Length: 388
Image (tube, rainbow, N blue to C red; front, side):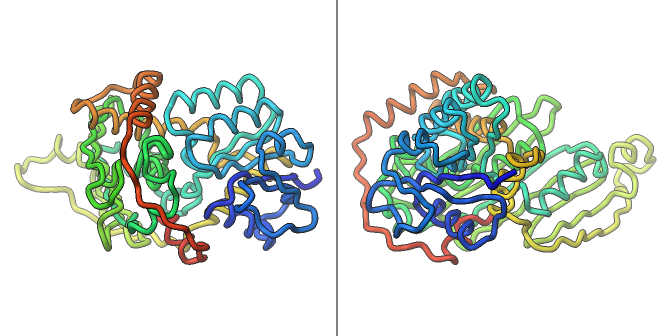
């Protein structure tokens, strides 16, 4: 099959980085034939790359087979639905949308108009061999039944300068949330990918605790699962140096992912079996210390782009289907709703009710955020902003 003709809409940090990676030949099977942004956001024209300031015109131009949506979150639904209805393949930056009602609208548009097309999401952390290995250990039953999970991921530190770079950032109207909608969709996606969806969520959130913003920059979440296991998830953009430690307590021991290593303190006898058969009240199973060697972080963004192209051209299985993107948004929405109402919420939440509350918060906000003119992001900035 011929190369996929791709258009990118939104040339902020992410859109520019993806564009450059394609131009540098890091992804095969894709020709970048169009870009779209406001006039001052467009790059220097290059041969073979049409430029648009109206995304509707780009969608209907005939210049592209697929679109990569890299615009602020609230625009994802409108652009994505229009592209799917026009018969384009769609790759959506995270999160899939601001709230689950918009996610469902995208999924409905795909099911009605996009069958036979590829609809993917940029959940690049699914390519990380640490999490792929952990998923294999869980799915094969190697570590036994998961009993408890704790993930402390507080190395998403951001400065006041970061939040001031864009007027849309860290506002209810412009972004729809803070750390849970911007930085942590990756981690929340991995959480549900690895452990499934909980039945109940309790969110303890602080809004503007560390920054001059109106949305959450500090969150402690409690997830209760139907099978009885409990999970906690802690994140912040105000702690430095921060930590990224995932702990999985299972029947066959404790597995941790931290500092690029997977360590498994493996029970020689499953804890449930040992408890039932031991004739000592204070003994524990013997353990082995297992360190699982992992190299690198996988292909990340370029691997997702490559997979998107391969799915279009050759029918490759998607690493991150966009229809699964509703789950991480559900976790974020439920956490915010719980914090606003001061109580535990059941999943799934009432999507339309949540959307109405969020809209009211945006419409009634009187918060004034400091804004500055952003300079060009460096490669180091891009790498730091997309780690987990």
